[in-house]
Image 1 (cartoon, rainbow, N blue to C red):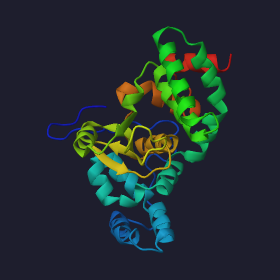
Image 2 (image 1 turned 120 degrees about the horizontal axis):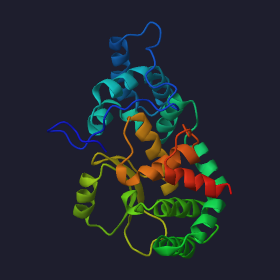
Image 3 (image 1 turned 30 degrees about the horizontal axis):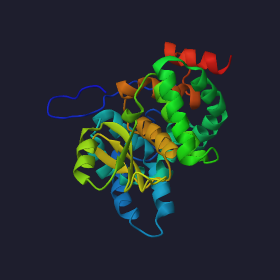
Amino acid sequence: MTSKPQGRSPAFKIKRPKRSEVNYCPQFPVGETEATLEKLRVELLTDIKLRNGKEMVKAKMEKTFSYRRYEVIRDAPMVQDFKGRWPALFDVFEINSEFKRLTTLPLQSRFLSKLDLLSRKLQALYEKRGGQIGKKLKQLMEEMKTESGEDDLDSVREGVLRALCVYLNEDPENLIKDHVGHDNTVFEDYAEETTVGIFTSRRHEAQSKPDDIGIILEGQVVIQELDNVPLAISLLFGLLYALNMDYPPQLRYFFEVVQKVIMELDGGVLSRKAQALINRLYE
């Protein structure tokens, strides 16, 4: 992450659009002004509380997309402030919709389907890896099979993604932090210190499924009660696009692979690690 001006931390900078960001900063809809779109934004704060407001929210989020992008790029707001202004965005459906508005591509379905296509090849690469990284990969994949069984698709996906971090010589705990027990202070300290991450929480170590899974950005829990970790990773990736955030340096290769290998977005220029991974996947 890049550093903030003094007095504001942590933050994200304005970045140049990736080639895959087709609608990086589109024009306002014909006939709309900043004032009229601001009025719609305020209406959204009420609409999201309505029992039957889903279609209104969907339509107004679509109409205010350009205004939201303008705000992100112009002001680079803190996530907490942005969520206060646009709470409707922090929802599984709307994150998927925003990503498609930006790139014209589906997020969750594309991520999971491509991951499934690559899963066996990735596992084969993990088995071939030697040295200390190879030992870590073997242990991680064995734990995955022991805890969940080979038929639990979500757990297999999660294991493959955690192992991808290890394979790229990055620490999966920088991506996913597992919490056990009821010590809220420990969790609050972790959340406050986390700029980009996913958490799982269990009451007891023996639980096979977490009680909660969520996403943290800039010290704030922005979405929780997600069904599984692979879903959380896809949504985190989508939020990084929607909020114009840089990939955290300690996970730069992981997110590069997600973007350019799994999602196949802007894959023309690759780091050596990503290029080596592609070469080995398709040998």
